[in-house]
Length: 70
Image (cartoon, rainbow, N blue to C red):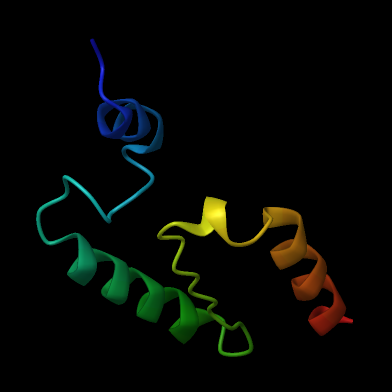
């Protein structure tokens, strides 16, 4: 039987660096910095999704991002 975390990792790897990736934080930080160096007018948004399913709807996040963008 597959655990939830195994199922999530199966679908997210290699596109995530938060779990089961050695040195994942360093990879993300350096990758983001490299992109921002090339695109200095871009911004980064970090969302902590721990337990987000019990507290906020994803649609609410995206609606607020669209409002802020306009």
